[in-house]
Length: 130
Image (cartoon, rainbow, N blue to C red; front, side, top):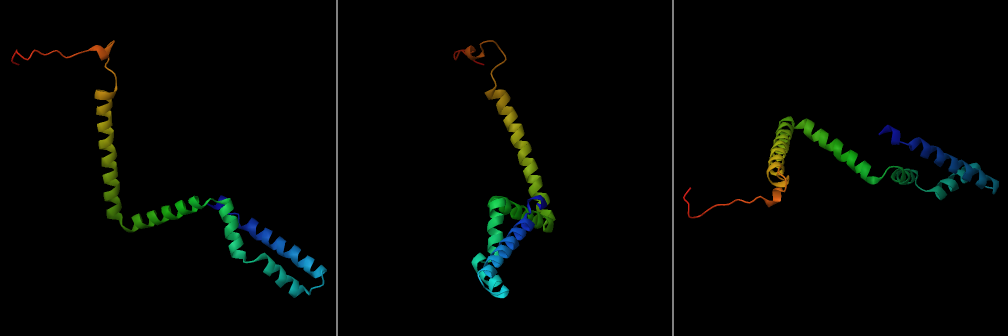
């Protein structure tokens, strides 16, 4: 997701902070090298900060989903026969479930197409052979 990649923004912000802190340290009387090292120590690990910023911009579950999706596609691409079998079974299962639901819906769930259909009864005389 290139549109979510704001690592350039974070890198610019990090460099700005380091430059400002270095300038303040030089104003306090440090040499430029000491000032830069002190600014880096104060800031901490750049990679950790970039990752923390990324977790703020992109929720963790989006990253996890993207990684899982890529892994799934790679796995299915390697095992083409397995992929065909899985997709066929899923298509067959969805089709069967659709047919069963349509039958249950039309026969059991939908009201009868008669006025006051709930009052219909079945009468049978047990003494009369069928």
